[in-house]
Image (cartoon, rainbow, N blue to C red; front, side, top):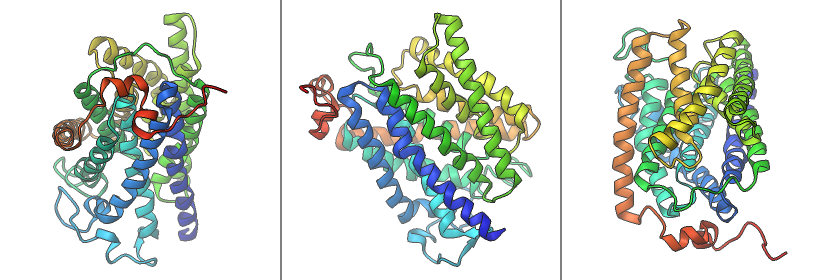
Length: 393
């Protein structure tokens, strides 16, 4: 199965990159006003480039280095030191494992983009994202997936945290970082405008749905029944959450929207992510059904209760979804309650503290928010001297 495993993870790697470029870019780009769509594309694309380089230089080593520390992997695999085309990680080449995990390191800080669109300084995006991936994301990867302190045999004993594809590692960390940054930035001057292109939103969500098969199915790291089950439950949860989000929206507001339907898809995908290697189709149905309502209500809590302008609802959809799915692993008896809840608490506190520290440092160095004139003009022109649409034609 070595050849089959390698072939599948090559495909999965391409699928996960496809989630960010162009999936997430289109999903987020359609949700903002027309004068900011190119800035969103720029954020996603530039983050993909920067994270790729940083992952090679030191990120992979921090996450998966051969060090014995429970806190980080050390520096022995900087620049892929000691790794050749013949070096194996399980049944696949380690360089392929590096590439697969690189696509996770790309999409995680890219998810945060949705919290600060329409008012962020581009230099802040790059500096913050790079530091956050190395100081926050990569250590958490090591703790859970790299044999660190939250894995089996770590601080929770024989049974460590169960997070198959990133409920804690990706969605909780990105969601909490998004909430912190949205709070620190403050609300946009005008929050009244609807998405400028719901069609982009649907196309982006569809790309994310397809790409998620690589995200969750690829996390099996093998071409076997486990990968097939992970793919299947991912689809069931996404489909069910789409329907329950739309149904709940219709019950509350009298109409179901396209943007709501596809946001439900993302909620279902985020919620099944940590559990996708541990549950079957019936459990996925339950997770998706609850996620569509839970994440929609979380949107209302953040917007109207906390009064935080998390512009594209990153915490409510990704953060709440990832946390919910992680807890459901214990509910279904596939993980220890102490390990699941304890890991959520530890990673949550760590993420908030580190995010605040990095944000304050980056703000002091390059600035955080654009001025009022730039926000009113739109970031496409103000930050990048480009326009998505020719308004005169």
